[in-house]
Length: 129
Length: 237
Figure: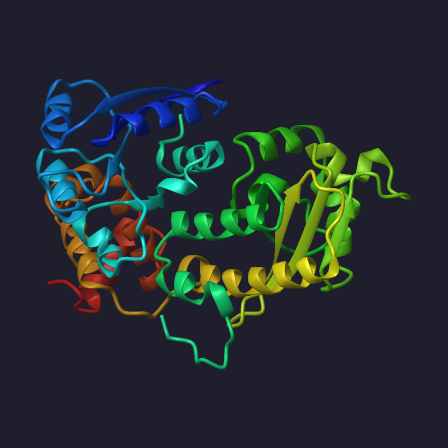
């Protein structure tokens, strides 16, 4: 039985949407619907629309916000209690050690996202059916 | 987690291991390690008694095999019958397996059954308890040279040591973090995981993960016993 997942990608670079969409096609066993927003405003509006969101993948630096320390609490304040993963190319920054304190679930480097990583993350965070 | 001494040489992995917080971080470390040495997947296997009837899927503490592969394997084969599993109980030397290894019939050949060409197994153990595990690397390469094999085995031992202490160790008796105490307080007020997630501004998954850690730390089996013990020990009022 194929599971379903709705991933919301929030990234100011539309190219990341294209890249993730191509990677997701290679993930078998999970029927993934990818939704894309370019800004936090768009993401909050998408959540308000009531469409299902199984997981949010969030670019760390979304202008005008500074980084996930502003964006993740805003998503939580909006009432989103699903998993949030922060995508960055600079995970070594010391503030990433406080990821969980700010309400995020995990971090992943842009270069590390491949079909195996997506499959693993969905298995870890999606409720078993 | 008690810091290790510099005597414990972790080479290039040191910084990343010191920063690893959760299972995704360890997935990242092991998956990158597998790719770096030419493999496509890894698995951390918990060893039990040799004669236990065991299933591959229930023995994998962390892995990045394609979803459902281990479960499909268990439907068709008995992991305990594989030559590979039996060998893990015979020696703790790292081993290299190829699908075309002679002297192993198909019914016992784990690699053929899983559909890979090459497997490196690195036996490891938990320093605190001696519990045995093996870190497996699977791929379609032809073989692995000595230098790569030694390097991979050393890195796997280092990474497993951290993974065990951060993710697998029994934490009974350890103190609760402020976040865990906060979640415990809300559990004692009868709140559900999703309600606590909203109140504390984290995901429901994080609440469940903290709850599992609190159960381990207090050495209890359910939420009722957890609250009773927390009140008895004056962790909460």
